[in-house]
Amino acid sequence: MSVKLGVPSKGRLMEKTFEWFAARGIALSRAGSEREYAGMVQGIDGVELVLLSAGEIPRELAAGRIHLGVTGTDLVREKLAGWEQQVEELAELGFGHADLVIAVPAFWADVDCLDDLDAAAAAFRAKHGFRLRVATKYHRLVRDFLRDNGVADYQLVDSQGATEGTVKNETAEAIADITSSGDTLRANHLKILSDGLVLRSQATLFRARRAEMDAGQRAAMANLSARLGL
Amino acid sequence: MTPQAIETQQAARLRAFFAGHGAMPVETGILQPAGTLLDLYGEDIRARAYVTSDALRGEQMLRPDFTVPVVQMHMAHGAAPARYTYAGPVFRRQEEDAARANEYQQVGFELFDGTNPAEADAEVFCLIAQALGPAPLRAATGDIGILLAAVDALETTAPRRAALRRHIWRPRRFRALMDRFSGRAPVPASRQAVIAGQLAPTGAPEIGLRSMAEVEARIAALREDAQAGPIPASQVALIDAILDVREAMPYALEQLRDISVDLPAIAPAVARMAQRMQALERRGIDVARLDFEASYGRSSMEYYDGFVFGFYAETRADLPAVASGGRYDALTAVLGQGRSIPAVGGVIRPGLLAELGAGE
Image (cartoon, rainbow over all chains, first blue to last red; front, side, top):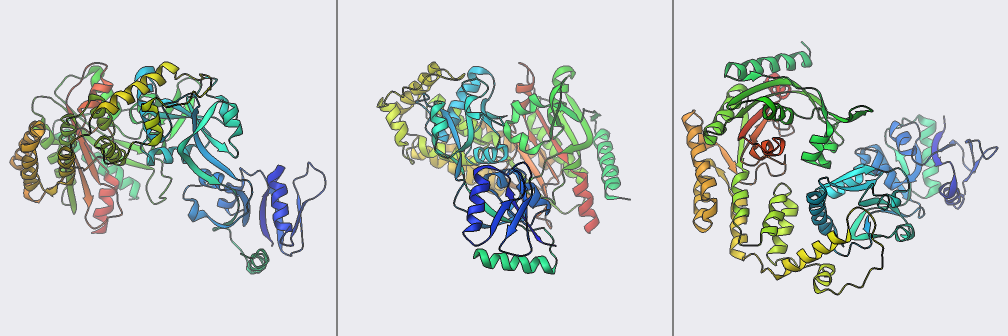
């Protein structure tokens, strides 16, 4: 059996991951046609490439169905309870940078920090009769962050896409989302709270702590670690 | 017998015990409308309760506790005084510690009676203690009402008192607010600019449900707040002194009486604590060995607003409270649509009790 390495199956994340491994003498490639999610590994023995959606990689790591996986820190922390017990961070790959931030309408001149958000939420609830809505898909991370910072009178509403548009559409008053440059936020007339950084994320190589390995796999893993300089 | 069978049997025994002491057995649905619980507890409840839904009734929660449905039931058709008992499974999400149960039995006793709150507090505490029997448990007690009275008496503006009151159950935020209102922490630069009116126009359009008028109202409130002087250091020290009280109950009472000389507004709350202590003593509790901590129960459940207590396994620090309870007068006002009634109650986890018994 070979060591299974999970890599995002498309887009920039896949290309950058391939480049990162190539720079270390390991050539990853997609086999066959563009539509086929099978991969090839050259330059090292005993390693098998599994192409997956970046969002599924945390779950596959936790289940031990892959031994190694490349995905964003944000996804691992959002999807895996007690993530440190399930996976180990082996290397930050230096791309796929994104920050999970709390943002509010830019015209809210009175709100600059979480303390302001909390006070605004209290007034909002008193006036409108419901809690101030924060749209996000990162429920656990955002809830933990707001609780640790003592923000009350808010509620999370689920938004799996186009989260920046929810305020204009009046389905939320504030958002928590991933941003790399902040351009999309600005284009949607939103600003980031000065202390609203929930998490700094980047593409990271993770090892599954619970994946079982036989002697051959352990040898391949040791060889791979040495080649990657881990 | 399996642990589940023992737990269920214990639950039935405890419920029968409470029923034998005048409580009417009641049932509530396992599925509860999520709206009420979310409105009461906010997002935190989502992290602790299982939420499910259907197209007809929308979001529902697997009962995280019985208190809310029992209070609703009482407020809808009950007449005071009333005593209720219940037993059944409750469900709590566990995302950090796999060793903690996500489904367990809970048996409770709730007392709705406004005639003598100190007696009612003592009745609930003693019944729970009696029901727990000889298990090696340590009791902890507190009284959120004393801190609430102290906050209400602070020499500062009404909005500041309201802000502090709102965060009584979030100790870190409470501390941060005290630091700011007393001038111990600086005003953030961004807020200074807002107060001074030095904001460059954002040029950003007005979007979303929170209107420009609401933004302006808060800026006006911030400016008004900036006019208010700091909360005097002496008052901050009194709040700190209250929060530091941690003693056997009679000594704690003495300390609080000393504090109430400088802060007379807490005197009624302290007097109620004294009455409660006497009531506990009359019922045979050794109050000299009963711990009292003024900040106890602050970080657990919002809406406990008076006497609070918990029973912990002395030999098993890893276990959560085997029993807990308290006074929740404000909760009945929130759920009572205009009506309210003083209420106090407590719950036992028979599964934990059985586990302790098995260890002996």
